[in-house]
Image (cartoon, rainbow, N blue to C red; front, side):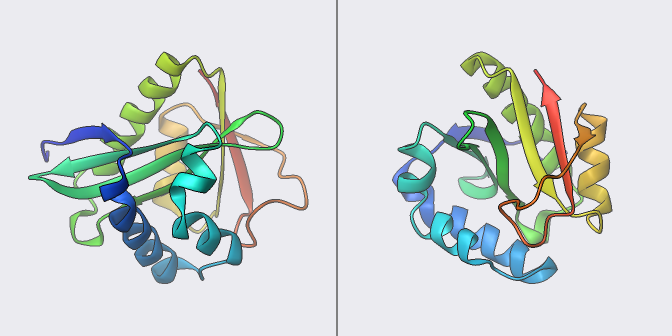
Length: 154
């Protein structure tokens, strides 16, 4: 297993946050307008709204990212999780998810939600393994690609 160092958002991580997410979105889906907006200015759309961006680093390189972003109902969405494509399959996502859940608990969050797509079988398996349960997906939802909504009580 790759040894990771975790950190919270700093402006120098903005480029890696955007690049890892764009790579992932372009590989599996399309980049939606909501994605472009958030990724172009993560400080404005995530940090300044009370959210957090967490990064996983290996040998001083950002290899994984995730955000906890508040929604209009005061819930926090686990979103924009991406791992360096060359390092997938090495449990970076699992380590990052565990760090994120621990971070959310320390922050005092009670519930996290996420939106995903059923074709991402590995991701859905991982979320379930960590305790996320499927809940009804209301329409409209923030993402055209989303066909499943999940939550975890922390």
